[in-house]
Amino acid sequence: MSVSRRDFLERSAALAAAGFIPRLPDGGFLPGPAAPVDVGSGVFRGRPVVISSANGIRGVKVAFDKMANGEDPLDAAIAGVNIEELDPNNQSVGFGGLPNEEGIVQLDASCMHGPTRRAGSVGCIEDIATPSLVAKAVMDYTDHIMLVGPGAKKFALAMGFKEQNLLTEKSRQDWMRWKSRLNKNDAWLDHDEDIKIKFTTGTINMNAVTSAGDIGSVTTTSGMSWKISGRVGDSPIIGAGQYCDNTVGAAGSTGRGEANIKVCGAFLAVEFMRQGMTPEQSLLQVVERVIAMTEKRLLDERGRPYFDLDFYAVTKDGRYAGVSCFEGSRFAVCDEQGARLETSAYLFKASERPKARAN
Ligand code: SD4
Image 1 (cartoon, rainbow, N blue to C red):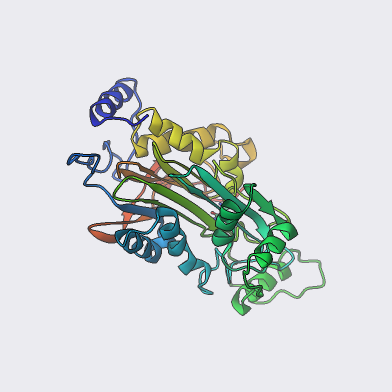
Image 2 (cartoon, rainbow, N blue to C red; image 1 turned 120 degrees about the vertical axis):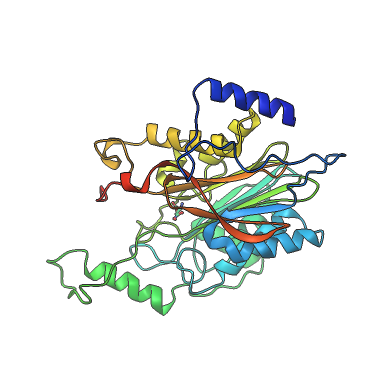
């Protein structure tokens, strides 16, 4: 069911009357990006549009240009994330991604194609730089939705993907630094005392809406750095790392996957949008649900999480938002005004962020 602008405004007013007031970057209330203008025959002035996590800033432009040339929204979004998957300097996805605790790069990705209501996913795949494309191949060429581990790699090789060592020298050195400083009493000597060891960063979620309102969504990642071998995050979980319903919109996430999986965050966001909430309202509700479902050890005494989690959502008619647990996040957008970073709404001010991690 699509939501007319009138319905949407009435429902938003009802939500506000019920006391649901989202907090925005400036701390005030805002109903979200300007409502799209219906210029007749289902054409909205907010489309086409591509949104992604901030690290997809190059990719949103690529995806937007591809859709302007008539390409499919999922193909366009995947082309957008491929740039980062293949970039050795991006240590959060694909080639050059930070490895697991054993020094092995294990990647997760998933995608959904709105117009045909199909999905594909790979978890814990090794030695293939573009898991987003393998996820799409699972969707296009099999009767399954998710392949994992050695089976996913075997499938990728059978489909003609090239095997390569994904551990770059930079990521190998980061891994060795992390490993050698794990335990003061082990046999590894500690070097570079002043070096800050990276922890989880990155992941790309990208959601694209064509001028006709067709939607594609994709998320790709090397997951949490230094994870236990075999760990799968939210990115390849349909409904958590990304979700797309061509009648409503799409959503996705980056950040602590364990926190998102428990609330099926991307699915929940799309469901809230289906009920008529704006993308901001939907995502703020999702983040509130995340916090409500978080175990005590990951919250400080005031209930603030020790982790980061960001969500991104776009409606079929081109409205969009980014929302984060804490003030300070941004997300990437490309529409007819070009590619840019915009500020995410948030639940807690930056000053409210707890000082220490729980683990
Ligand atoms: C995961 N959500 O594997 C990913 C990691 C991530 O910023 O997004 N890091 O849990």
